[in-house]
Length: 490
Ligand code: ZN
Image (tube, rainbow, N blue to C red):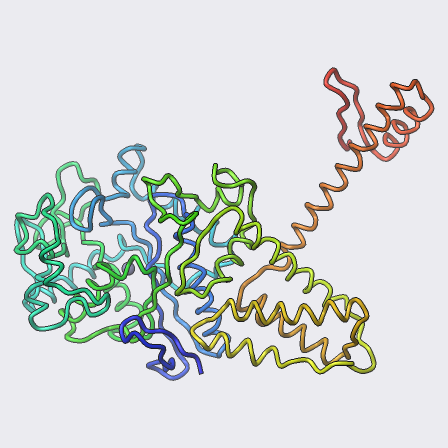
């Protein structure tokens, strides 16, 4: 039985879907005005593991991950400029060009990380009509008001009837006393009220007609609207990063309770955050490392490139609710650990079965299922796979023997847990092995060049000509230049 930690109830609960055999899950997706960085990788990988596991358990899963392409504002959720619109203005592009450009890059990064595409990837900008209808319902229920062409959610009124803050555990009175005054708040009855619809300023390039003004929807609204549209008025799982718990998800709950009279989501799940060398990721720390920078090794905090599988493996070495601290040395350790795991996998494929097993294998699969069922405890799964590697290595070295049935069991263990559920690509490891071979090959040719150089210096023309001629016969083009010898394959 799968247990997942529900942020709302604050306990691990047995997972029971609303409809037998089917699961609806919604995860807050990227805001597409910049390249994906590490902060995007963790929720994507966390919920990819959940998606894979639920499907493995036999559920038909509808996984919705939205694209935020409107209403995500600078400063806070209610004021400032739309981030997509700002990028479009600065780069003289259509807003949808900005969205498509970064969305393509996001997909490319996710593919590299072996994150499966969701079932539906709806754009906020494609659901303006639905969002307007949703606002109308909240106004009808009395929990929203119009003010100078904008519509705000009435937090204080809502909190009197319901509990605003139940997800994040925040106390609204504390919030009221700590909320600072912001621009445009004179439109609001209360500084905590959040925008459902914003009237567009004249320079704002993304706007739509509505009963209240030419404007655009507030950010929190898209997830309530699209979640309901694709998963129904009640659905199983809503996920996202812990940073979205407040205010984003708190506002989503308030919106759905206001519009429908009840909660929409049964299980709220939040992955913890990633720090970099002990610090929060933030512009002021200059430590935003994009995924592409990781893959290419192009950042002052990195000593070399790291393959997407190393990043994925590193993230999975921690349970999703614990913090992860990224550093170059931690990544090097993850790389080593992954190579060790892949060595075990390769040795397993090459094992020759013995007549009889000389040891009794532990029930690794049962232990791995137990770990996955315990709120997706991926580090535990990895530990079990390493333990399995120990047996494989012993069998390879001849210290123990394994029969065909045991070898098959281990093969299916690695297929299920390493490849299918943890989503580690073993073929890209082969790619890495290829690049190792290439490096060794280039080093060997360079070595021959050095030998030839020494031979020439010693006026040993026989040796130097032999090397040149034999390499030429093999298809090498060797040239003596001012800077030394250059070679390539013709
Ligand atoms: Zn959301």
